Image (tube, rainbow, N blue to C red; front, side):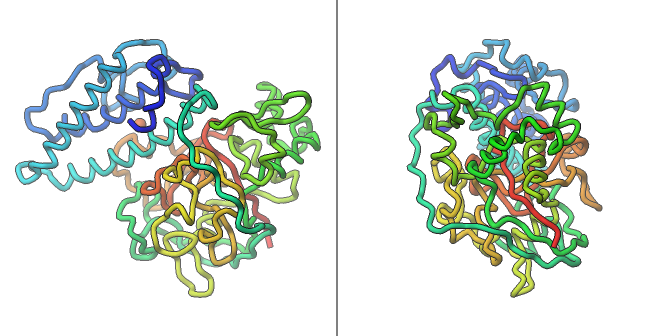
Amino acid sequence: MQIVAPLEIEDYVIQTADFMSPPRWHIGHTSWFFETVLQAYKPGYRVYSEDFLFYFNSYYEGFGVRIERPKRGTKSRPTVKETIAYRNHIDEQILSILHSLESVPQAETVLSLVRLGLEHEMQHQELLVYDIKHLLCDQFAVPQTPLPKPAQKVEGMAEIEGGLIWLGYDSAQAPGSRPFAFDNEKPAHQVFIQNFAIDKAPVSNGEFLEFINDGGYQNFRWWFSEGWETVTGEHWRAPLYWEQHDGEWMIRDFSGLHSAASRKDEPVSHVSYFEASAFAKWAGKRLPTEPEWEHAACYDGARKVKQAFPWGDTDPDGRKTNLFENGYWSVSPIGAFPEGANPYGCQQMIGDVWEWTTSDYVPYPGFKSEFDEYNDKWFVNQKVLRGGSFATPQLHIRSTYRNFFHAHERWMVSGFRCAKDS
Ligand SMILES: [Fe+2]
């Protein structure tokens, strides 16, 4: 509710593209998720409104009929006022079940579903930021904390030794204090990787501008066939939110319109997998695989241990990372978070931009679904992104977190760093 507070009432119901949802929908949908828990586990619970169940269900076949996604912006009802009343009602009901857990037959299950509901809500908090950016961008009057200055220059690649490594979430292996992980991060298992090198910093706007100025978007040789089809079909010439004014590339974000040159030392964002791959090929490199990324983010080669985060086992905070709580509403300059570096000198692996990997989003060996249709039904035709963005809440991110999007999508805060065989 704090995220949407600066919105005017008209802003809540508009859908600016098929892939985004009106803010009012997120506000109601996250409560709808909790209402499914109430329906299943609160004795005598009566559904708030059949109409709301229809409008606020996202994609769950198991929870009945629902409005088609591209039509979420075609309805002015339920109103924003009605949606907030629904939210308050569901919050009260969830609090009341939590306060009387001793009388709930399956208390453990309810608790784990409430945790899932909170993680789901944090995912939608991040989606809200993407969607408000698409809807309003610099017209969104939100207070922003000034960006930090880079503390050092971060250049070159880190050489990392391969071998048999552990991939995935296991709190015993990488302790930290994160008791939750999604089913798609489990079980931890071994995979073999070759020696490799990985960029110490995410690819910057300045580097990406060189690719653009070198005719990168006009040269088929850097692109996958499907990527080239998208570039030509959609007339892409730069990342999303880049605009050309009097021949100069500008980037629009929550704080206004800036020349790309003035933002050259910030990570490039809003690029698709196609664009990230094309850049990597142009640069004579490649994108990392998911095991390479996680190994770089978590492994301390000197101590020979897997740790929870690049910097160790302590939780993320505003000195090590740029996550939502920093309040920047923006990527931050490369080199602004030396305290968040891994033992090899890689910076900003957590926060700033989600980083594309070449890995397909498929279940790990031994995967067991913990909630039907949540993650399990998306295991086809999507790519894994790692690390979280400036819109990700601190409590929500883990080094083992597997985000996933289609190769052409770029309205999320997506960037990348390159890798190389060594
Ligand atoms: Fe959802």
